[in-house]
Amino acid sequence: DADVTQTPRNRITKTGKRIMLECSQTKGHDRMYWYRQDPGLGLRLIYYSFDVKDINKGEISDGYSVSRQAQAKFSLSLESAIPNQTALYFCATSDADSGANVLTFGAGSRLTVL
Amino acid sequence: AQKVTQAQTEISVVEKEDVTLDCVYETRDTTYYLFWYKQPPSGELVFLIRRNSFDEQNEISGRYSWNFQKSTSSFNFTITASQVVDSAVYFCALSEGGGNTDKLIFGTGTRLQVFP
Image 1 (cartoon, chains in turn yellow, green):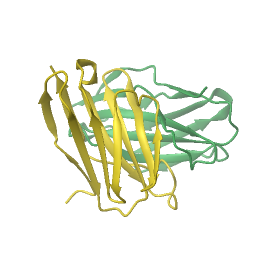
Image 2 (image 1 turned 180 degrees about the vertical axis):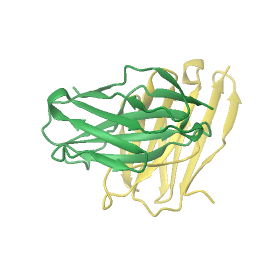
Image 3 (image 1 turned 30 degrees about the vertical axis):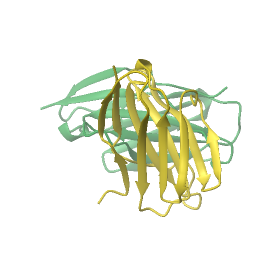
Image 4 (image 1 turned 60 degrees about the horizontal axis):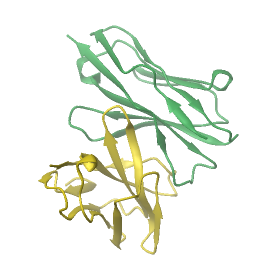
């Protein structure tokens, strides 16, 4: 099994629908992140969490919310999806002891909002 | 403000050629970390290297080498004798502060295509 698992891998939805992307990890890492990848823009940080009680906004948090249900689980929600949220979403983890920002990524969740 | 520029959008080479991917960064901090990540066609990003701002020694790992030059704010990545399996999008990234920070700023990536 992958160290960082994202579900679903692909989702097509309609404008206005609520969508949840889930992430679970077996690395035992404290830190978890959600990034968004758009062509020509690289990856941008949406939200991050350094432990279960810590949630922080990233560069582009508007329109998104997150929940850290446990150390191993970090979900991203789009309460009312819009077409410009069509993107590839990545969950990542890191361990403060081994070096912050040495990220382990999931395989990505491709979201299409029609 | 911190920024990472990868001016090369796409590079195509023939197998066994050497290729250098450029990365230029901007930061006001004296302590920072630089990274390279690889995104193969499968999509999952893979960590390649991390270098802190106090260590300008170049690094070689097999066919991969990295040249860090603070004078030009560059952290370039060279693949020697490229192979088809090197085909991927490569991202350079920067984090400021002591490395234990919340933000990793990515460049826009360079797509490398290696043809047989």
